[in-house]
Figure 1 (tube, helix red, strand yellow):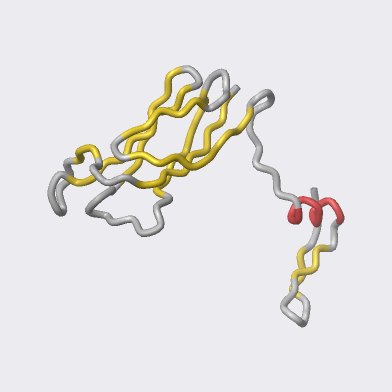
Figure 2: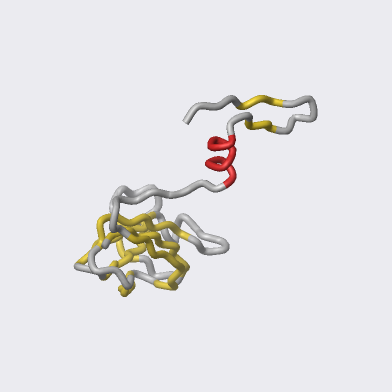
Length: 117
């Protein structure tokens, strides 16, 4: 796909190629042929299990989605999977500035996106 992108006088972007213009206006997140995507928000404290609706999970992304997250309460989110089931974990530092993590004791919201078959 070839095309040109120009900056016009009014600081608007003008796309000269129709295919490129369509691609910019309608971006597509691609996954391998036959794969599907699922995602959502879940509330959890230390961990929670999510039935994704997929047959198997190829990959996932999880992130803290709490309105006012506190680093002392939750420092990281991580995940594991078994078949089509995603398990999300929320961890916090064992003590301030520690490199050791323990299960979170504060409830929060985690966003997740999974892809697979």
